[in-house]
Image (tube, rainbow, N blue to C red):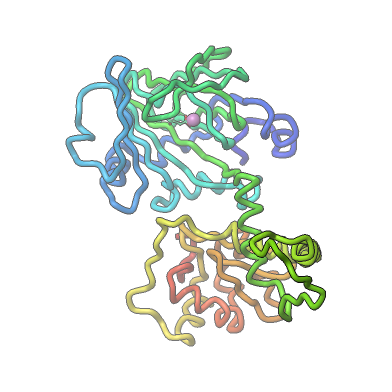
Length: 371
Ligand code: SIN
Ligand code: CO
C-alpha cells in the first residue's frame, strides 16, 4: 500500500509533488521498526556511514562529522545525530525507500535517520530536494513555512534561516508523514527523545547535468582531421585571436550535435553512478560461472542494497557501468532493475552469464530478497 494515507500516487504527484506540503497521520506504521537507537548509534560510530552531530547550547551551534565517539553519543544537553544512507545498511530502511517507488529511481536518493534529545533539531532551514519526513520514535514538532524570504544567518556552521516565520505546526508521532517540496522552510524540534526518518529525492543542479553530459559527450564525439587555415594572412598582431580562427572554431563547435538516444544513454550511466564514498564488497569465495548460474537459478538474485540499476530502450546500466544483455533478455533485466530481485525461475543460463560480472564485484548477490 502507498504511504500516502488514502491518496493515490497520481493525485499526489499532480497536487503535491514539488508543489505543496502534505501531512498524513499514521501513513507509515512500520516506521517504528526501521531502526532502533542502538543500531543507529552503531552506524554513527561506523567509518562507512556518513554521520553528522549537531549540538546547540543557548544560541551557539556546533557541527561534528562522524564517525562519532561513544561519549559524543552519551552527552547530556541538546543535540541531534544524523546518519545518511540508512538504506545501504538496513533491509528495513531499503524496504521503506521502495515504498516510494512510484517516483522514479533516478530521483530517489536515500533514507536518512536522525536521533534527537529533547529540544534537539537542526534549526530552521530549507532543503533543495523533496523530502518525506517520517516519525519513527517519540514526537517531533514540525513548524513549516512557505515564505519566500530565505536569507540565512551569517557565520553559522550550518544553514539557519535568519527570519523563520512558521505558518503551520504538526506534532508528528510514530508513523506520521510530512512531505515538503524543495525550498519549503521547516524547523523540527524533538519534544522527547526521537527518531525521524527522511526519505529524500535528489535534484541535480541544471549546471551539473549539463557539465556532466558535455564531459560524457567529449569522449564520444568524432571530429577527424586537423585544424586547417590555408587562407591565413600575415599579421602584425601575432598575439591576437584573429577573426578567421574564431569563425573556424565557432563553426566546428556549433556543428557538434547529439540526439535523445545519447542523452538517454548518458542519463542511464550517470544517474546510476554510486556516490564517492560507496564501496562494494565482492564475495569472499566467489562461485565460478557455472556454479553461479546453478545457484541463481535455484535461489534467485538480488541487487546489493547500494546498487542502482537503470535502463532505457537500448541499455542497462548498473552502478554507472553499461551491461549488454543478450537478445531476448532485456525484459528480465528491466524487471531486475525495477523490482531489484529475480526469482530463480527467471534466471536462465544466458542471463546468469550476463549477471556474473556484477556478482563478482558485489553489485548483486545470490539471494531470494534484496540485500
Ligand atoms: C532531522 O531529521 O532532524 C532533519 C531533517 C530535515 O530537516 O530535513
Ligand atoms: Co530539512
